[in-house]
Amino acid sequence: MAKWQKVVAITGLAAGLAITLSACGNNKSSSSSSSSKGPTTLTMYQIGDKPKQYDAMIKRANKILVKKANAKLKITYIGWGDYSQKMSVIVSSGEHYDIAKADNYAVNAQKGAYADLTKLLPKYAPEAYKQIDSAYIKGNKIDGKLYAVPVNANVYSTQVISFNKKFVDKYNIDISKVNSYETLNSALKAFHEKDKHTVALAAGKGFKVESNFDYPLGNTLPFAVDISKGANGKKIVNQYDTAQMQSSLAAMHKYYQAGYISQDAATSNTDYPIASNTWFARQETQGPFDYGDFQLNNTAGKKDAIESKAITVPLKSLSQSQVFDWVVGNGSEHKELAVKVLGLINTDKTLLNGLVWGAEGTDFKKTGTDKIKLTSKYDPSNQMGAWMTGNNKNLYTTDAITDKMIKERDTSIKAAKSSPLLGFTPDTSSVKTEITNIQNVMNQYIDGLNTGTSDPKPTIKKMDKALKGAGYDKVQKLLQKQYTEFLAKQ
Image 1 (tube, one colour):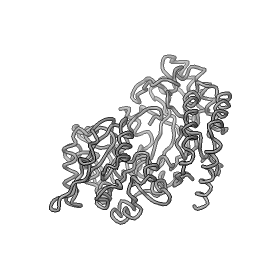
Image 2 (cartoon, one colour):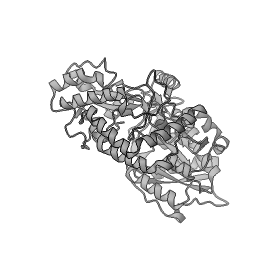
Image 3 (cartoon, one colour):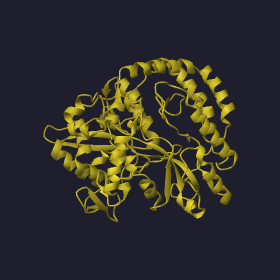
Image 4 (spheres, helix red, strand yellow):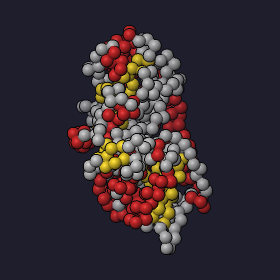
């Protein structure tokens, strides 16, 4: 998924959702309803578009939930662009809800907005708890407590450079030696010489050059831990001051000067659709349930449309562990039941696959125990996205996913490296002003640096001076102290 675009990922197992709607309601209408005789209705807030076949989908799901938990779900969908703001209002107003997609997870958990699931999850959803990769559990613990039911999916990610195979084959371009931004030069040059009207390297506003780092406060701020080969991962540094990042940024600047990158990249919101021929190379993120290039090719609509080369190690990172978290509202009157329902969504295959794939016999047909073939009536916009619903290991796979691919997926998950930042949640309450000032400084420089528009050496020198004035040293010292204490307890 491109870092600089608001794109909804489609995993190798199912389509994701896109963007919009549904009003939040008010305190009274959003609270759970129950009857002493009938099932309890739990309210759930979900991000994205409401599925076109929502009524049929939720009817199938509730039939199972009533039978197994005497519960029903009522899902309110809030668009991608509105979710954070509306959930902030819901949290601050104290509105009661039962289940929601976490927003600003660590901060809201520390505020007490989410129920403590440390004991509830193993007790009321034991099977789901056992199936969650330990990296998710560790990455979502805050001060030793767990407040989330993470969706078990792409637990690790690898940053790759993806190439448009149409152009690779047409111009016979060698991409075999690409393993970093620095090694991209010959491929970009060869393409640009043949086609000067198509962008050689897609980048735009918000684009981030990725390297082997993990970030305690996100990748828009200059605080990082180096997890590359040979790094001890114990120091919090400014990634822009490291040799590896400066080398990558210098390469980007070289490509910008050569015309391989759009000259308005730092300010441009130009879209480069994955299925289009408007680009030659681009940065993407892949995880185990993407099955290598399978999902990118599936999105592009052609089997051999994309070929990718890894530029970072597979990493179970802090950010990856919190990609999609379900939380239970601390004001919910049905916490135990909410956890039980989340457990069923993650472990009951009929329930989960009905939410993601649709109705058996209509949207898909079983071809084996866990294998399916999609029918012509299947439409991803009718269902929920796999990466934002439940345990992907319990999802049926289409016939296109072979047993060999599944075995390689599971082997890669076990082999992936874990970030030393997993489980580290810094307390930055005493440096809120400094962090705001630092973010303002980064906003001035970050797009120019990452798109290659700015010359990194003089630009980073100016940026570092401004960061120092914004209070960088104070924040770095605080983070380092807390991180050192965290590591000592591991």
